[in-house]
Length: 230
Image 1 (cartoon, rainbow, N blue to C red):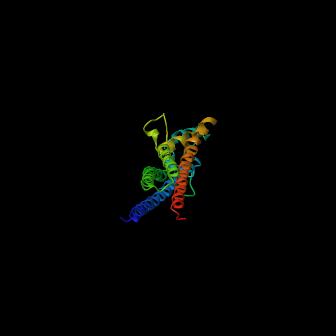
Image 2: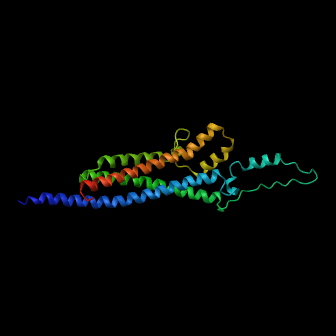
Image 3: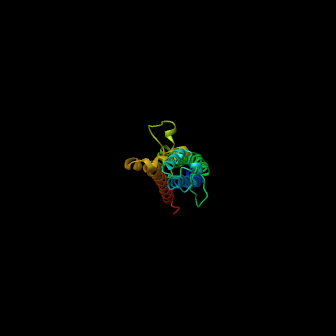
């Protein structure tokens, strides 16, 4: 019996596992970049609405009539002349209307849900291949998998299913429009909560995604070091 046969089988199995891991690593990195870009687009949308960078024509759907009434009360006109109330819409240097921004938010939400699920599944497959192939670095990939799970869970728009109970980092155009329209009437505590909701929670989700990616990078270096590739 050839004593080198078991070693050759182990080497073949390890090589196959490394090839599978290489495929999953490429997918994982692609999903990470797409998810990060989508999160940046969401935060940019919030900043655009908060600082009135979008044109006000479509944004005035919420509270627009109230603003017109308040402006009319402040106008002192000649009683012999008819009062013509023409609300002045804010213009944007980017010529960006809210309806275009709403479409961008919906697209970002769809891409985020898709990539978050695929990112977690990819981490799970990498974990399984690492355990079956005994590639090492299990500690790092396990941590990366749980961080990716936390990222996906906190990302989901739970406020659509459990309103008033819990919320996620994602938001719809209507939620953003309504919250920013009322922001001018918030007190200090409501303002802090407003920014924690749309910026602080977003930052937490981004950090979870980045830490998961960093942990998976440590796993890659660990298995390469164990197999004496580097």
